[in-house]
Length: 281
Image 1: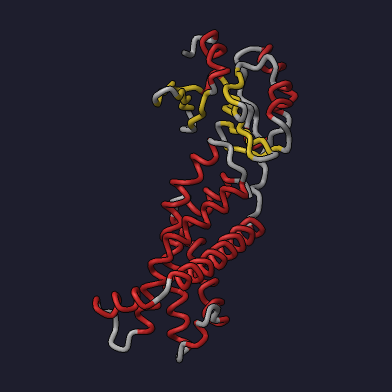
Image 2 (image 1 turned 180 degrees about the vertical axis):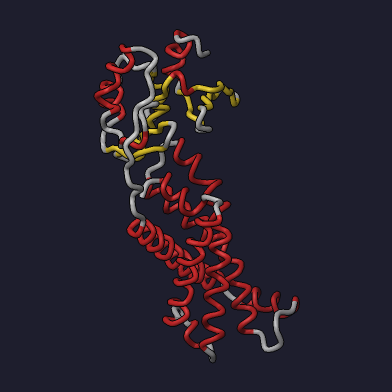
């Protein structure tokens, strides 16, 4: 999966997506309650074992949205590989859930419930290597869980059926001819009003006013097919159409293009002169 696909599943704040994610995570919690990994099978009652895992899983589900929305967009802009982005997301999720694992351990081992004195006694009694071992177990389980759910989600998704649409009229005949070689690669339902191109690993994601599509090709080759089209490359991983630029923002020495589809595209220093020639800067 690409970073954008991971962000859309784990971070998209829609009711449908949250329900779908909760369903996947809840099913995983039930399976873990049946298996009872990491000595949790020693819990005397099956109900307690399922409650233990479901509580941790649901906390993880709630935590995943804000983390995904905060981590994946900057990693995508920085050109991180999907594998590295996935690994960092798994580590962040593990760090977030680890205090709740410790709390559950205190609760399950306390004869009189969770008290401040017993909690301090427990934390002081447990050795440093025990914490490292517990966190390692949490990290392994979290990584496997996130990876499995992500792949299952991707496998069950059905691509939206392509509906024929008439391309919008181009500004002039030259523009229409100039970009046709690349635009013919797009699904008919995406139209022909290209906004930007962004590299994702070995793929190229093309954004139009009607959606986006992944294409297996290099940005260099796409820019060649778009020669003459009103747009230019502004970063080693990004190409933008001139008509898509809504605003130019500056963050210190960084220059960011705000597009009309609300995407933000960074500008490399080596492309600043070309933007100045176009009158954008």
